[in-house]
Amino acid sequence: MRPVIPFVTRISLDEQAHWLSVFAVHLPDMDIRPLTALSEAERQAASVAIIANPEPDELRSLPSLVWVQSLWAGVERLVSELEDMPLAIVRMTDPQLAETMAEAVLTFTLYLHRDVPAYRRQQDQRIWAERPHRLPQERTVGILGLGNLGALSARRLRANGFNVTGWSRTPQIVEGVACHSGPDGLDAVLSLSDILVVLLPLTSETRGLLDARRLALLPSQAGLINFARGAIVDTTALVAALDAGRLSHAVLDVFAREPLPVDDPLWEHPSVTILPHVSAPTTPSTASLIVAENLSRYFSTGEVPAAVDRQRGY
Ligand code: NAP
Image (cartoon, rainbow, N blue to C red; front, side, top):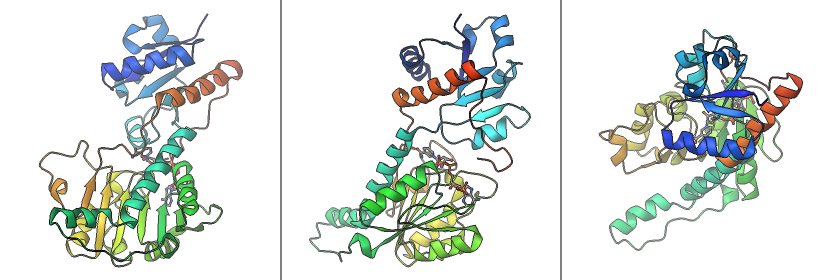
């Protein structure tokens, strides 16, 4: 008999239907259903659930849960909302997600490197003027976070000729990348980064990490790309640095409040490019293969995949 697996989400019905259709193709041996389609006995028996922004109380209605497979890579909300539930949280670690993020990092690093925002402003005023051109090897890109997404992004930037330096909690090795760790390491990376890319998880240690003092360590005219979580950057300090002309431009894909409220002044800031949390969306066709692998292994060997370390928060 196929195992019954609840799909517990707060995503739209259309998105839910799309995921279920992809699961049907890639996980034909499993009976994956929205929570509402499970009988009481099936709820009582479920030891694993697939989740995407789940309502915590819905997970509490599954008393035998041992672990949950999230469809998303970021887990700060799950770690806080499921604090009292002793289950293992497995996040999405799809190599395709890292490829998609590396593509976004390269795209927007080149956008800043080639001065696209400034040329756009010149066009608005019909100004025909060449701006100073720098080679990628004359530019250092700093990456905060050298995990699945940061490490591949660092390699992609290296392949494009940039000097790359990176920062992580514990020492990491990425070929061709000057890697740093710890608080002193952060200051060193910041002081070198003509373009700073944030790819850290949001934890109690990284919340508000890029405050006024740390932003002031960036070289004059540096650019910032935040593809991680909005609350890692102090927006007031960032806007002050942009207004003062200390920093040149910020590309923001993530915000403390999402969607960004329509009346937020960031929308109209001339030195800010806003993206609606799209730098690395999960791709259902590849992510479902990761889910299939994890669930198949669990049902054949009982092995629960590597889970989030709740103490560290990622
Ligand atoms: P990951 O594999 O867990 O890597 C996290 C990296 O950050 C690791 O290198 C880790 O250090 C480092 N780190 C964590 N806490 C730190 C601290 N206090 N000080 C210094 N370094 C610290 O995560 P990932 O898969 O690369 O994803 C990173 C984040 O990207 C996710 O948490 C999510 O919020 C965000 N994301 C955004 C999008 C989007 O579309 N905008 C899409 C997917 C993910 P160690 O190497 O020492 O562990």
